[in-house]
Image: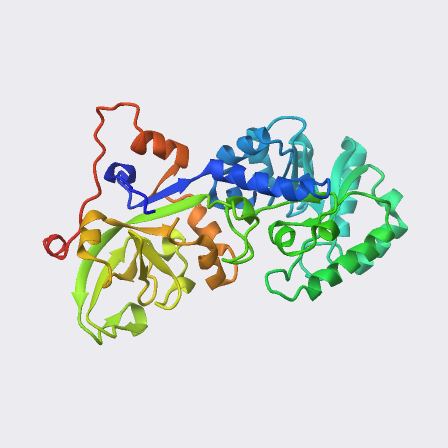
Length: 412
């Protein structure tokens, strides 16, 4: 399937982004089924505006679906989410911890910091001693050596737990798998052993370890604990292009961009900066109006890596991705298809988000393409369908895409 994007949908902008909130809810249900296997809570990690799907649209729907626990990156996201979900039964956790001077707004907005070192814990406890007891999550380092309490801090916490947490309600212990995507999960099992070592020293609390990848790749009985917290899986991502939370998993974002130029170049010609690619045949190229400025990352450059789609035809990237455009090889696309469409699919039914993520080894592509951008016409899928696929005004005429041919482009 190749989605028809009317010219009116672009408006004055060269890129259209469609956010499928119903797909997010559908994917959350798949994780709920995983959580139900072990009688665990199913939270939602919505940091980075849920990888571009936008909290204002997604989180109320997740709440309606029964989600009451949400993880964000930092205070500013927590404040934003609290304005969206003011309900008392909604618990909002900030993974970035408690930075200096943030104590008051954490209490004011009823946010729970995931405390990443002993200094944060001591500071939060001291503040709460004066202003009232508040919740806290303690985040343990089990091998990544990033944010989280280290061995010596855990030992000190174990020796002085009642004193150090005298005015805190510690609601959860948590950690995070750091080496999950491959087939060798030795490091994951070492992390679980370390977590067990830590928690044996401390008063019993619920534990959260599992996120999207681990619920798919590891034994749920051993890793779900009391809470799972899926993130990228909510938007249709997974460990890799082949592995899904469910065969029913759905992509939640589609991106399309206009073609600004088509032309023929002979064999042996350079394409892009630094002559990074030379044509091996007479080649018909198209310039897609999206570049690294817009979040289409430069590491996707190269004909053997990423591609876009016109109709159901894959069109490889030639040369380096530029600031605001990307060169595509459309030689094998029939003229009839080129005449029908004046745009390409960047991410969608024919360009698998997971495959793009595999190229870069992470889902940076989602954070990049999902952020606000003045040159993108942004719609939820529901809005798009109501306006352009099933308009209420039956007399409204939707403009078709401008057909592109070599002749028409040469006149510009």
